[in-house]
Length: 367
Image (cartoon, rainbow, N blue to C red; front, side, top):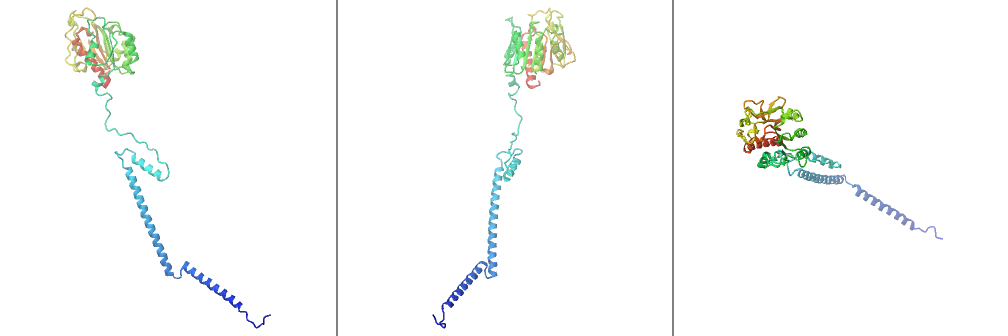
C-alpha cells in the first residue's frame, strides 16, 4: 500500500497530450480554411478577376476559331456552287435546297437537271430539197412496153434526173401491191406516177387506190387519155376533188395542127411550166400517130376545187379545153393527152418539171 501523500505524476501527462492534440487539430483546421477560402478579400477578388480573364480569353479564342471555321465552310460552298458552264435554270435553287436539307440532317432532294437550251433550230434530217429528192420513194406504172421502138418517157426522165424509183411497167398486179402495201420500209410513197398509154388497161379499183394514197399525202401524176369513158366510175372521186370535168378531144381538121397545145393565159409562170425548165413548146408533134380518132380528153373547171388549167388547145381560155391541170395544192397533176404524140425531146422537160414539183410539194410542202 502506497502512502496517501505520494503524488501520481502520470495523470497530468495524459491531460497534456489531449491538449496538445487539440491544438494541432485546431491549427490544421484553420490552415485548411485559409487555403480553401482565403483570409484576404482582396486576394479573393484578384483570383476571381484572373479566372474571369482566362474565361474571356478562352471565349474569344473559341469565337475566332468558330468564325474561321464558318468562313472556310462558306468559301467551300461558294467554290462548289460556281458552275463550270453557264447556269441552267433551277441550278442555284437546287443547290440551296440541298444545303438546307443537309444542315437540318435530312436527305437532299433529288435534282432533275433541265434539258440543254437550244441555241439554234435543228437542221433538216437529210439536208435541203435537192438532197431529199435523191432519196425519195417513187413508184411508176408505165404500160407502153410492147413496142420496142418507143421510149419509156417516164423511166428515161427519172434516170436522167438521177432519182431512185420502182418501175412496174405494165404489171398491174405489182402496181396494185405497191399501192396497197406502201413504200419499202413502211410508210407512204413520196410520188406515184400512173402513165396509161394503152386505153382501158387501168380503171375501176386502181383509182380507189390512187385516191387512198392521195389521202396519205403522197403526190400523184396521172397521164390518162381515156378518162371521159370512165368518168362516171371510181375516178369521179378524184375529178371532183380536183375540180374538173372531162369530155372527148376530137380532131377538128385531121391534121397535125389538131395535136398541138399551148400554155394557157395566166399559167405561163406556174412552176410546172418554168421550174427547172422554162420556155416549153409543144408545136412539134409526131407524125406516127393517126389524128383521125380520139386524141384524149379535154378538161373544164367546175369551181368545186382548186384546179388550175395550165395547157390546152385554146391559149386564150383558161377555164376549158385544158389538157394539163394542177390541183389539191399541187399534190395532183393531171395530163389528159398522150405523151407519145410528141417527141421525147419535147416531153422530157415537161416530165422533169412535173416530177420535180410534185416531189417538192411532198417533201417541203410548197413549190
